[in-house]
Image (cartoon, rainbow, N blue to C red; front, top):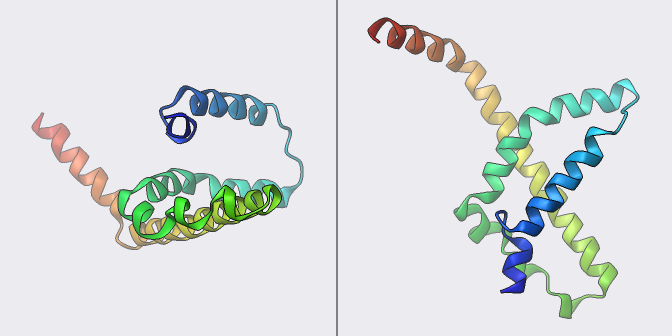
Length: 125
C-alpha cells in the first residue's frame, strides 16, 4: 500500500512533488543560447514522453522496474544511479519516438488536413 502510494501519478505525494518541482523550475533563470535551444527543442516532446512511458504495453514489456532494480540487490548509491540511468534512457527513447512522430506528421501534412476538416465541420455546424 505505501509503495503504491509513493509511485502512482494520482497519489498526493506525487502531486505535491510535481507542484514543488514546478515552483522551483519556474523561478530558474536560464542563461546560454545552447541550453535554451536544447530546452526549446525538447519541450514539445515531453507530452509524448509521458504518454509513451505510461502506456501499459511499454511499461509491461520494456520497463518493469520491479525486476530490473531492487533495493536488496544494490547499495543505495548503486540503486539511485541505476534508477537515474533507466529514467534517462526511457526519456531519450521516448523523445526520439515522439520526434519521429512529429516529423511524420509534418511529412503527411497533418496540420493542413486538420485545418481542412475543422473548416468543413465549422461549415456544417
